[in-house]
Length: 232
Image (cartoon, rainbow, N blue to C red):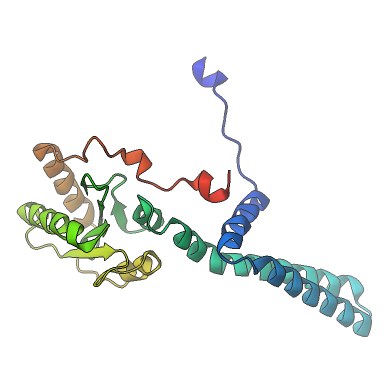
């Protein structure tokens, strides 16, 4: 009965996603609306002109409208992710917003594997390139945390490549917008079968050593709110 009475989440329509993408993009690029309107007017006007010249009104006007829609969607697709990264840069859990989009071939930790009282976090991915630890916070504070995670991993996966990546704006760090590309450039050395086995070893090690995030850190809050990004 409780399940029957529970409100079901409404499926989002394409135009709702389009509106959300526009809101996010417009916060970082206020000119996007004018470019979309101007480009659409030009394409539709071109369709009308070609319809007049060829006497095929319906086909060319429809083509102009479709091209205008493609232009708008293409602009948003190219800019929305960059705009989102700019807006969440520096917030707690911003790294998770990037790595949570990298699903195929990777096992992504849904919670930070390490944190300190300053709310600096370390996240973990396991994939064919090996084990990747990604930190967010000043280098002076996160480097010892990354080195500790590397030592722990070497205890159960000695021959597995380990990559340490620092996200931030200090020396030797990369920006949030560069993270996705850095991860995808890592050389694949493991087989698909080895990836889940290594992930299970690391999870078992965490359970054995009771390695957990400090109680002052709420793992669920260490993720950017998608509703906040949409402006709700």
